Image 1 (cartoon, helix red, strand yellow):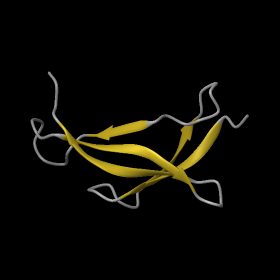
Image 2: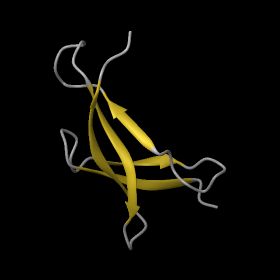
Image 3: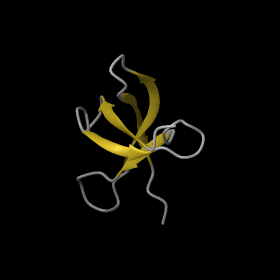
Image 4: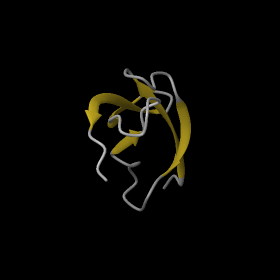
Length: 71
């Protein structure tokens, strides 16, 4: 079991961003990420869903659109 994996974001405002994420007990990294917009605090978040794993082991997360900010 891997404890950490590399991840890369594909598409959207965070395209090309990469980082290391922890892997829970399920052997799969988190299924979704949301990032705040660089605009003001009331702007929607950019959502990325786990898509696939490259041959070199990096998990790719595909841009899945924006989701509203819940307050």
